[in-house]
Figure 1 (cartoon, helix red, strand yellow):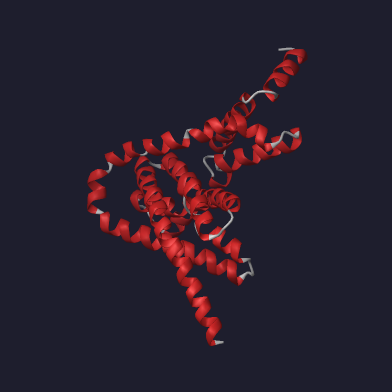
Figure 2 (spheres, rainbow, N blue to C red):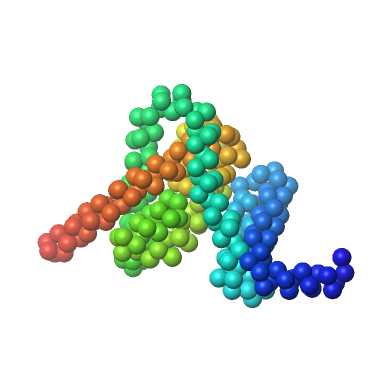
Length: 250
């Protein structure tokens, strides 16, 4: 292919929604190759690497994010079908799921509560604004649900979306080492922890390690979103009441 052919291809792609789709797929393919070349080191998680590559590409090319997303949204659309498809490996673990329904319920409920409460309290201790605290509360659930919760409780949905992505990437990066440090070997336990703390990004990483781990992570991701949607608005009201009482007492 000559330089002229490459130039024509770039001109065509830069004016087409295909640019976002093409660049996204190429970035992830390259990131996955790097991940395999590094013996699946969690520090080079494909999601983290591909996001970094895409940011660098958009900054160097000067292409606005909205223009990129006009094509990248096709990948975004596939999140729905991919989430539904998680039911297949989960069904294969149905017998074990029936035996573990009580500890799973307790783990997901407590994980959603502690995750939201700790985020708010740490942000408060570090001097973050109230809106930032509320934006942090639903950070451990999938983006559409987290943004809806943030909007309802008075947070900033766009900030929540960024925090959700960062939470998922950090969870996927540190989880493997953390499980080894804590000597946790059961894939169902690791999957539940991954789904509660790192939602979709963590679930995708879990499937690269074990189908059982991925199945339980997908279950935890869905149930955590449901639990968080119920718990966080109540938690915010409760903390608001405590603050009001503390103010009156002082």
